[in-house]
Image (cartoon, rainbow, N blue to C red; front, side):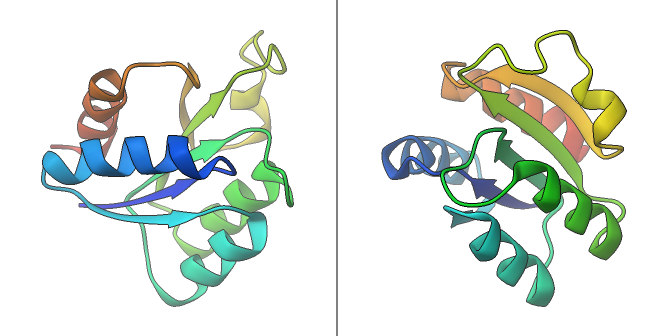
Length: 119
């Protein structure tokens, strides 16, 4: 299964990447909207782990582009803010399947990837 991690903080993205790779996933990283869109323009992802607050660009634009380009891809949103904490993210992104705090342990994130990725 292919996983795209879109996370502005390289150290957090690497933590998740290493853990998911140990679980057998093919993982790519992007740090901005432009990086994520460039990747999704030429390749696919089954699951996208997407930080809701990117330093460069919009997470909702990434989710929207993924929905258009790869309609079967699911998005797991992560954040360290209270923005969308009411669950309204599911009204804004049709491909959203989960909403987690950024501090979620990597093994729990991997379990969510497995669950929503069908493995």
